[in-house]
Image (cartoon, rainbow, N blue to C red; front, side, top):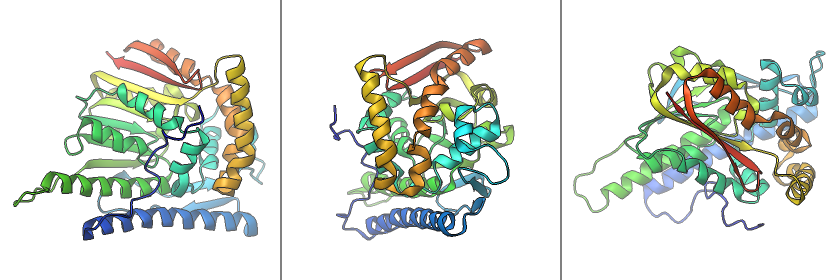
Length: 352
């Protein structure tokens, strides 16, 4: 149960490569992690020394990956001094878009540099298993995939490997620009690695390109212009987004850009079944509320200190998403899959 053998291997680059290209790839990845770490430290220093109401982050552009829409993102502090609702109040009642966005931004302020390691340890390695189950729901024939809350490319890399690194078109939507920087470095490294594999022993080298574009904004704010040049999509995937967004808004914004028979797969935390499993879950969340910020940095405090637990309990996201898909009338085979004794769930559906 406590085995860490399933943890993601994306947390650190390898150091055994001998070629100049591999060394360059490692430097690129480390540079992205270092940039994210520096942002995190700067953010923390401002909170400790200046305590500003907002911290502005600007997006670092990568030439290897396309940005469909790139803009400055503002991260709000957990508690505002302008009379606005506190973070705890937002978690308790996420009825408005402003509250939902405040929660998502406050939970992940410049944490891209160690997110992979944090999610692996905080879930006792089960995150890797949940993503494996999510990927099993994605048809290998998918050639144009839309990923919401793509984060640091943990799922993105696996989608490309499952469906075809150089034959799959991938569009990623995420609100956190430092996570996007890490994701770009990972996919650039994957592209180089796959090219080395395909050209090994060949006299004539053939360089493939990964077709990935990023839309840097809230998934609730997706417009037709954001996706029209990339669609139509035959698969929509997301991990950990459902509890942070309005299901109706997200579903209605992506529906026009999906093909008939398109697959939808979303995953998130859930509350385990009643009994000992639930008691263990509550104890685990309480322990991480204390231990998480100490292990991974104070920037994780807002996420771990009871707020995430409260959000998971109140969201009931699997039922909400399932009901919304059924109500819209253009989705079939809508299912809720409870996994790991109810500690996580998948919702799957097919577009009519």
